[in-house]
Length: 87
Image (cartoon, one colour):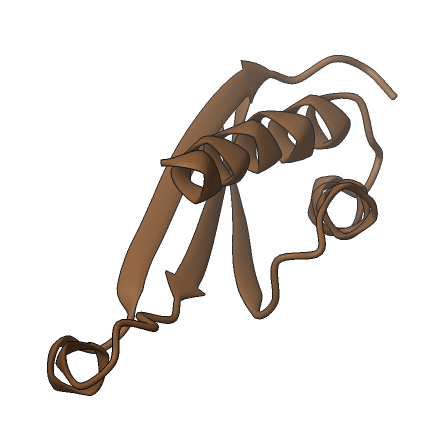
């Protein structure tokens, strides 16, 4: 749905920012915070070789009466990787 597409876009935004920053973690988190109102959102940044990977996780509350409390939140997750560039 629309929120999954938003989470995927945020992962790309974070990876793009992290790829060109001296501090990839802070850059990804800042870019994602500026680009969304989804809350709470979890961001993890990892580096391997010449690439940076950003994973965004959002716990989408289920608001269906009665059933929502039984099935709980839906976890939306997306990951994006980009090659690192010199800052």
